[in-house]
Image 1 (spheres, rainbow, N blue to C red):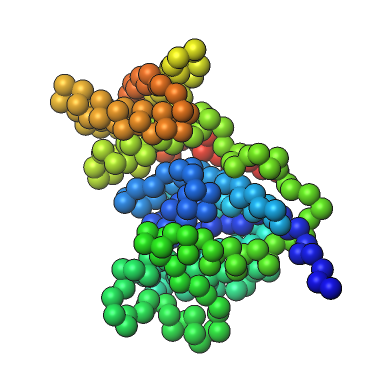
Image 2: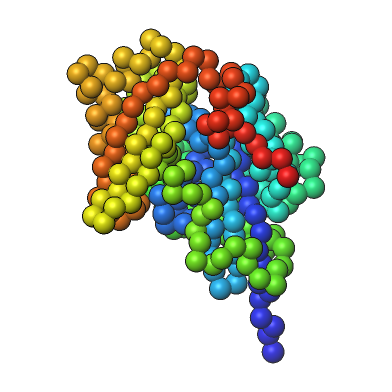
Length: 301
């Protein structure tokens, strides 16, 4: 006679360097576009929570910003976010991109080895390594007998999800009940998700450093019978970036709005009227008061 599997529930932190594939993995696990994705590094700022509900478990994945060494301005918030996410996790998934620098990858693994939280090493983007090439940090994994799983979320998403879950689920604590309503797949508010879709379009349409000094504030969200009206403010930290964000005859901001509107319409399942404005708040990325107003503050609890 076999006993039933115990029900498990807990928090799983997804951590790693910028562009390690954390957001892509979270979206694949949920089969929802929850975390925004960009080819540019450091796209994720605030943590994003996605909830996977199964008959035998509720897994609360938390997509943390990429780990950085810099602690100036908004980078301090990003590092505080990562530290807080890891501190509250029941399990940590260390995502190590196959092309990641050896030093930073080993530094992250050493940090997790020194802690008490169970963790799993996940080597991502294995499809970019041809032939018999191995990641630069592979020797460290082998010498320290660190179990790991290699995945390609881009080419084999379902296989990647199954591999990750097979390692994570046994490490979660047993629970008498789910931590959240099983009908939920995220704790993000609609306004937060809308703001992220707009910010994703900004990352895609703007070049160089501009997206890193840009934040999105939802000023109005009005649901009507046949359409949802949304007004957002694009907050930038330099006056000379305003003309670039707007573009010649408004072409750039129009392109941002069109891309974001399409994403928001898919998410909301309704027609959307999206209005965007640009506001300059010089040096906001180094101003604690403005950062707090824009939601870039780690809640103390």
